[in-house]
Amino acid sequence: MFRLRRAMSIRRIAVAGVVFLAAAAGAVWWEVRPVGGSGDQRIVLIPHGASTRQIGDRLVEARVVRSRAAFMLALALRQANGRLRHGEYALRPTQSALEIVDVLVRGETVIHRVTIPEGYTARQIADALAREGLVDPDRFLLTALTQARRFARPALPDLPIDSLEGYLFPDTYHLTRGLDEADVIAVLVDRFERAVGADLQAAAQARGLTFHQLLTVASMIEREARVPAERPVVASVIYNRLSRDMRLEIDATVLYALGRHKEVITADDLAVDSPYNTYRYTGLPPGPIANPGLAAIAAAAHPAQTPYLYYVLKPDGSHHFSRTLEEHLAAIRRYRP
Image 1 (spheres, helix red, strand yellow):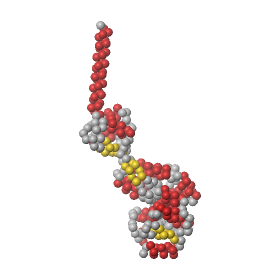
Image 2: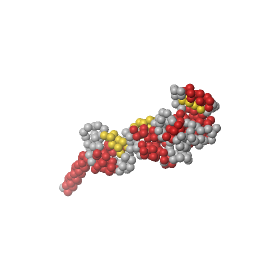
Image 3: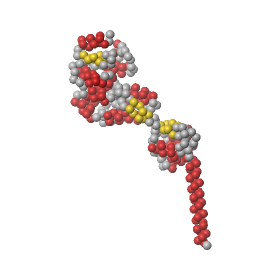
Image 4: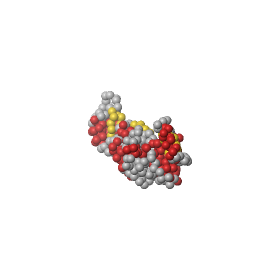
Protein backbone atom coordinates (compact mmCIF):
# COMPACT_ATOMS: atom_id res chain seq x y z
CA MET A 1 0.00 0.00 0.00
CA PHE A 2 2.79 2.40 0.93
CA ARG A 3 4.57 1.78 -2.34
CA LEU A 4 1.36 2.40 -4.28
CA ARG A 5 0.77 5.74 -2.51
CA ARG A 6 4.39 6.74 -3.13
CA ALA A 7 4.11 5.89 -6.82
CA MET A 8 0.89 7.90 -7.11
CA SER A 9 2.57 10.82 -5.34
CA ILE A 10 5.48 10.73 -7.77
CA ARG A 11 3.09 10.65 -10.71
CA ARG A 12 1.21 13.67 -9.35
CA ILE A 13 4.48 15.57 -8.96
CA ALA A 14 5.53 14.59 -12.48
CA VAL A 15 2.18 15.67 -13.89
CA ALA A 16 2.37 18.93 -11.97
CA GLY A 17 5.87 19.47 -13.31
CA VAL A 18 4.77 18.88 -16.86
CA VAL A 19 1.84 21.25 -16.40
CA PHE A 20 4.18 23.87 -14.91
CA LEU A 21 6.69 23.55 -17.74
CA ALA A 22 3.92 23.71 -20.31
CA ALA A 23 2.53 26.80 -18.65
CA ALA A 24 5.99 28.37 -18.49
CA ALA A 25 6.65 27.54 -22.12
CA GLY A 26 3.29 29.04 -23.02
CA ALA A 27 4.07 32.17 -21.07
CA VAL A 28 7.42 32.49 -22.82
CA TRP A 29 5.85 32.00 -26.22
CA TRP A 30 3.15 34.53 -25.34
CA GLU A 31 5.87 37.09 -24.67
CA VAL A 32 8.07 36.40 -27.70
CA ARG A 33 5.33 35.58 -30.23
CA PRO A 34 5.06 37.78 -33.36
CA VAL A 35 3.36 41.12 -33.00
CA GLY A 36 1.27 40.10 -35.98
CA GLY A 37 -0.71 42.14 -38.44
CA SER A 38 0.73 43.32 -41.73
CA GLY A 39 3.74 41.45 -43.05
CA ASP A 40 5.23 44.65 -44.48
CA GLN A 41 8.91 45.24 -43.79
CA ARG A 42 9.92 47.72 -41.12
CA ILE A 43 13.35 49.30 -41.53
CA VAL A 44 15.23 49.45 -38.22
CA LEU A 45 18.65 51.08 -37.91
CA ILE A 46 20.84 49.76 -35.11
CA PRO A 47 23.60 52.35 -34.56
CA HIS A 48 27.19 51.45 -33.87
CA GLY A 49 27.66 51.09 -30.10
CA ALA A 50 23.94 50.84 -29.25
CA SER A 51 23.20 49.01 -26.00
CA THR A 52 20.81 46.04 -25.86
CA ARG A 53 18.25 48.22 -24.09
CA GLN A 54 18.50 50.85 -26.83
CA ILE A 55 18.15 48.13 -29.48
CA GLY A 56 15.10 46.79 -27.70
CA ASP A 57 13.54 50.26 -27.61
CA ARG A 58 14.10 50.70 -31.36
CA LEU A 59 12.46 47.35 -32.07
CA VAL A 60 9.47 48.30 -29.92
CA GLU A 61 9.19 51.68 -31.70
CA ALA A 62 9.18 49.84 -35.04
CA ARG A 63 6.44 47.53 -33.68
CA VAL A 64 8.30 44.31 -34.47
CA VAL A 65 8.58 43.13 -30.85
CA ARG A 66 5.93 43.43 -28.13
CA SER A 67 8.08 44.99 -25.45
CA ARG A 68 11.61 45.55 -24.33
CA ALA A 69 11.08 42.72 -21.81
CA ALA A 70 10.08 40.35 -24.63
CA PHE A 71 13.24 41.29 -26.53
CA MET A 72 15.43 40.80 -23.43
CA LEU A 73 13.78 37.41 -22.82
CA ALA A 74 14.48 36.33 -26.41
CA LEU A 75 18.04 37.59 -26.03
CA ALA A 76 18.52 35.45 -22.92
CA LEU A 77 16.96 32.37 -24.50
CA ARG A 78 19.29 32.67 -27.49
CA GLN A 79 22.28 33.50 -25.24
CA ALA A 80 22.90 36.37 -27.66
CA ASN A 81 23.85 39.20 -25.33
CA GLY A 82 26.88 40.98 -26.80
CA ARG A 83 26.51 39.19 -30.15
CA LEU A 84 24.10 41.56 -31.91
CA ARG A 85 25.48 43.40 -34.93
CA HIS A 86 24.76 47.00 -35.79
CA GLY A 87 23.43 48.06 -39.17
CA GLU A 88 20.17 48.54 -41.06
CA TYR A 89 17.64 45.70 -40.88
CA ALA A 90 14.42 44.92 -42.73
CA LEU A 91 12.22 43.18 -40.15
CA ARG A 92 8.59 42.06 -40.16
CA PRO A 93 5.97 41.99 -37.39
CA THR A 94 5.22 38.40 -38.45
CA GLN A 95 8.61 37.34 -37.06
CA SER A 96 8.90 36.27 -33.44
CA ALA A 97 11.29 38.02 -31.08
CA LEU A 98 13.46 34.89 -31.22
CA GLU A 99 13.62 35.09 -35.02
CA ILE A 100 14.47 38.78 -34.87
CA VAL A 101 17.30 38.13 -32.42
CA ASP A 102 18.61 35.46 -34.78
CA VAL A 103 18.62 37.97 -37.66
CA LEU A 104 20.56 40.51 -35.58
CA VAL A 105 23.08 37.87 -34.47
CA ARG A 106 23.70 36.79 -38.07
CA GLY A 107 24.01 40.41 -39.18
CA GLU A 108 21.56 40.04 -42.08
CA THR A 109 21.55 43.75 -42.81
CA VAL A 110 20.08 45.65 -45.75
CA ILE A 111 22.86 46.12 -48.31
CA HIS A 112 23.18 49.26 -50.45
CA ARG A 113 25.11 49.13 -53.73
CA VAL A 114 27.08 52.30 -54.44
CA THR A 115 29.60 52.91 -57.21
CA ILE A 116 32.49 55.35 -56.76
CA PRO A 117 33.67 56.41 -60.25
CA GLU A 118 37.36 56.72 -61.06
CA GLY A 119 38.62 60.25 -60.56
CA TYR A 120 36.16 61.25 -57.84
CA THR A 121 37.56 63.49 -55.14
CA ALA A 122 37.00 62.74 -51.46
CA ARG A 123 34.30 65.42 -51.46
CA GLN A 124 32.49 63.78 -54.38
CA ILE A 125 32.76 60.40 -52.66
CA ALA A 126 31.33 61.88 -49.46
CA ASP A 127 28.39 63.30 -51.42
CA ALA A 128 27.76 60.01 -53.24
CA LEU A 129 27.73 58.04 -49.99
CA ALA A 130 25.59 60.67 -48.27
CA ARG A 131 22.96 60.42 -51.03
CA GLU A 132 22.57 56.76 -50.07
CA GLY A 133 22.29 57.69 -46.39
CA LEU A 134 25.54 55.85 -45.62
CA VAL A 135 27.61 58.67 -44.09
CA ASP A 136 27.46 62.17 -42.75
CA PRO A 137 29.45 64.00 -45.48
CA ASP A 138 31.10 66.49 -43.12
CA ARG A 139 32.29 63.79 -40.71
CA PHE A 140 33.45 61.67 -43.63
CA LEU A 141 35.51 64.52 -45.07
CA LEU A 142 36.95 65.56 -41.72
CA THR A 143 38.14 62.01 -41.10
CA ALA A 144 39.37 61.31 -44.65
CA LEU A 145 41.24 64.58 -45.13
CA THR A 146 42.76 65.12 -41.69
CA GLN A 147 43.16 61.72 -39.99
CA ALA A 148 45.02 59.56 -42.51
CA ARG A 149 47.33 58.06 -39.91
CA ARG A 150 44.37 56.31 -38.25
CA PHE A 151 44.29 54.02 -41.27
CA ALA A 152 47.92 52.89 -41.38
CA ARG A 153 48.41 50.03 -43.84
CA PRO A 154 51.43 48.51 -45.58
CA ALA A 155 50.18 50.19 -48.77
CA LEU A 156 50.20 53.58 -47.01
CA PRO A 157 53.78 53.84 -45.76
CA ASP A 158 54.85 57.13 -44.19
CA LEU A 159 52.21 59.38 -45.70
CA PRO A 160 53.67 62.89 -45.84
CA ILE A 161 50.25 64.51 -45.32
CA ASP A 162 47.18 63.70 -43.23
CA SER A 163 44.87 63.31 -46.23
CA LEU A 164 43.63 60.04 -47.71
CA GLU A 165 42.83 61.70 -51.03
CA GLY A 166 43.99 59.23 -53.65
CA TYR A 167 43.67 56.19 -51.37
CA LEU A 168 39.85 55.91 -51.41
CA PHE A 169 39.67 53.30 -54.12
CA PRO A 170 37.03 53.82 -56.85
CA ASP A 171 34.93 50.68 -57.16
CA THR A 172 31.44 49.29 -56.53
CA TYR A 173 30.75 48.72 -52.83
CA HIS A 174 27.99 46.95 -50.94
CA LEU A 175 27.52 48.76 -47.65
CA THR A 176 25.00 48.86 -44.84
CA ARG A 177 23.73 51.92 -43.04
CA GLY A 178 24.76 52.41 -39.44
CA LEU A 179 28.50 52.12 -40.04
CA ASP A 180 30.75 54.75 -38.52
CA GLU A 181 32.34 57.06 -41.13
CA ALA A 182 35.76 55.69 -40.17
CA ASP A 183 34.46 52.15 -40.83
CA VAL A 184 33.36 53.15 -44.34
CA ILE A 185 36.71 54.82 -45.03
CA ALA A 186 38.49 51.67 -43.82
CA VAL A 187 36.50 49.62 -46.37
CA LEU A 188 37.66 51.91 -49.22
CA VAL A 189 41.27 51.92 -48.02
CA ASP A 190 41.29 48.14 -47.60
CA ARG A 191 40.05 47.79 -51.20
CA PHE A 192 42.86 50.12 -52.31
CA GLU A 193 45.43 47.98 -50.53
CA ARG A 194 44.13 44.80 -52.18
CA ALA A 195 44.02 46.40 -55.64
CA VAL A 196 47.45 48.01 -55.68
CA GLY A 197 50.10 45.33 -55.94
CA ALA A 198 53.77 45.31 -55.06
CA ASP A 199 54.67 45.74 -58.75
CA LEU A 200 53.26 49.26 -58.74
CA GLN A 201 55.16 50.07 -55.56
CA ALA A 202 58.33 48.79 -57.24
CA ALA A 203 57.61 50.82 -60.39
CA ALA A 204 57.50 53.98 -58.31
CA GLN A 205 60.88 53.20 -56.79
CA ALA A 206 62.30 52.49 -60.23
CA ARG A 207 61.32 56.00 -61.29
CA GLY A 208 62.88 57.50 -58.20
CA LEU A 209 59.49 58.34 -56.72
CA THR A 210 57.69 57.44 -53.55
CA PHE A 211 54.42 55.63 -54.12
CA HIS A 212 52.63 58.72 -52.80
CA GLN A 213 54.24 60.78 -55.57
CA LEU A 214 53.33 58.18 -58.19
CA LEU A 215 49.73 58.23 -56.96
CA THR A 216 49.77 62.02 -57.20
CA VAL A 217 50.80 61.75 -60.86
CA ALA A 218 48.11 59.11 -61.42
CA SER A 219 45.45 61.41 -59.98
CA MET A 220 46.36 64.16 -62.44
CA ILE A 221 46.29 61.67 -65.33
CA GLU A 222 42.84 60.49 -64.18
CA ARG A 223 41.44 64.00 -64.14
CA GLU A 224 43.08 65.13 -67.40
CA ALA A 225 42.87 62.14 -69.78
CA ARG A 226 39.37 61.50 -71.05
CA VAL A 227 40.48 59.00 -73.71
CA PRO A 228 41.90 55.84 -72.07
CA ALA A 229 44.60 55.39 -74.72
CA GLU A 230 45.99 58.84 -73.92
CA ARG A 231 46.74 58.11 -70.26
CA PRO A 232 50.36 56.95 -70.83
CA VAL A 233 50.94 59.94 -73.15
CA VAL A 234 49.65 62.43 -70.58
CA ALA A 235 51.93 60.69 -68.07
CA SER A 236 54.88 61.25 -70.38
CA VAL A 237 54.11 64.97 -70.61
CA ILE A 238 54.04 65.25 -66.82
CA TYR A 239 57.36 63.44 -66.41
CA ASN A 240 58.98 65.35 -69.28
CA ARG A 241 58.05 68.68 -67.69
CA LEU A 242 59.16 67.57 -64.24
CA SER A 243 62.55 66.52 -65.63
CA ARG A 244 62.99 70.03 -67.07
CA ASP A 245 61.84 71.82 -63.88
CA MET A 246 58.89 73.24 -65.78
CA ARG A 247 55.69 74.07 -63.97
CA LEU A 248 53.11 71.38 -64.77
CA GLU A 249 50.32 73.94 -65.40
CA ILE A 250 47.54 71.36 -65.10
CA ASP A 251 44.04 72.83 -64.96
CA ALA A 252 42.72 70.02 -62.75
CA THR A 253 45.10 71.05 -59.96
CA VAL A 254 43.71 74.58 -60.05
CA LEU A 255 40.17 73.26 -59.71
CA TYR A 256 41.26 71.14 -56.75
CA ALA A 257 42.85 74.19 -55.15
CA LEU A 258 39.62 76.14 -55.68
CA GLY A 259 37.57 73.29 -54.20
CA ARG A 260 34.90 73.44 -56.89
CA HIS A 261 34.38 72.61 -60.54
CA LYS A 262 34.28 75.30 -63.23
CA GLU A 263 33.88 74.95 -66.97
CA VAL A 264 36.09 77.98 -67.66
CA ILE A 265 39.19 78.77 -65.60
CA THR A 266 39.99 82.48 -65.35
CA ALA A 267 43.27 84.32 -64.84
CA ASP A 268 42.23 84.96 -61.24
CA ASP A 269 41.75 81.23 -60.77
CA LEU A 270 45.24 80.52 -62.10
CA ALA A 271 46.65 82.92 -59.51
CA VAL A 272 45.11 81.16 -56.48
CA ASP A 273 47.80 80.72 -53.83
CA SER A 274 47.77 77.01 -53.08
CA PRO A 275 50.52 74.37 -53.14
CA TYR A 276 48.12 72.40 -55.35
CA ASN A 277 48.18 75.13 -58.01
CA THR A 278 50.72 73.83 -60.53
CA TYR A 279 50.51 77.09 -62.47
CA ARG A 280 52.14 78.81 -59.50
CA TYR A 281 54.39 76.16 -58.02
CA THR A 282 56.96 73.94 -59.68
CA GLY A 283 56.96 70.21 -59.04
CA LEU A 284 54.25 67.89 -57.83
CA PRO A 285 51.45 69.07 -55.55
CA PRO A 286 51.56 67.77 -51.94
CA GLY A 287 49.32 64.82 -52.74
CA PRO A 288 46.72 63.39 -55.12
CA ILE A 289 43.96 65.65 -56.40
CA ALA A 290 41.50 62.76 -56.87
CA ASN A 291 41.19 59.02 -56.40
CA PRO A 292 42.54 57.32 -59.53
CA GLY A 293 41.68 53.88 -60.84
CA LEU A 294 44.16 51.15 -61.64
CA ALA A 295 44.53 52.18 -65.31
CA ALA A 296 45.68 55.68 -64.37
CA ILE A 297 48.04 54.31 -61.71
CA ALA A 298 49.48 51.89 -64.28
CA ALA A 299 49.97 54.78 -66.74
CA ALA A 300 51.86 56.72 -64.06
CA ALA A 301 54.02 53.66 -63.42
CA HIS A 302 54.59 52.89 -67.12
CA PRO A 303 54.37 56.12 -69.14
CA ALA A 304 54.81 56.31 -72.88
CA GLN A 305 58.15 57.50 -74.20
CA THR A 306 57.41 60.74 -76.08
CA PRO A 307 59.03 64.12 -76.74
CA TYR A 308 55.83 65.98 -75.80
CA LEU A 309 55.77 68.85 -73.33
CA TYR A 310 52.30 70.27 -73.97
CA TYR A 311 48.75 69.20 -74.73
CA VAL A 312 45.48 70.96 -75.43
CA LEU A 313 41.95 69.58 -75.23
CA LYS A 314 40.11 69.11 -78.51
CA PRO A 315 36.32 69.39 -78.89
CA ASP A 316 35.94 65.59 -79.11
CA GLY A 317 37.53 65.10 -75.67
CA SER A 318 40.90 63.90 -76.95
CA HIS A 319 44.12 65.93 -76.78
CA HIS A 320 46.55 67.39 -79.26
CA PHE A 321 50.12 66.88 -78.05
CA SER A 322 52.99 69.21 -78.92
CA ARG A 323 56.76 69.23 -78.52
CA THR A 324 57.36 72.98 -78.51
CA LEU A 325 55.62 76.08 -77.21
CA GLU A 326 55.15 77.32 -80.77
CA GLU A 327 53.34 74.11 -81.73
CA HIS A 328 51.26 74.32 -78.56
CA LEU A 329 50.18 77.93 -79.21
CA ALA A 330 49.19 76.98 -82.76
CA ALA A 331 47.12 74.08 -81.40
CA ILE A 332 45.39 76.42 -78.94
CA ARG A 333 44.47 78.77 -81.79
CA ARG A 334 43.15 75.81 -83.76
CA TYR A 335 41.12 74.11 -81.06
CA ARG A 336 40.15 77.09 -78.90
CA PRO A 337 39.15 79.77 -81.40
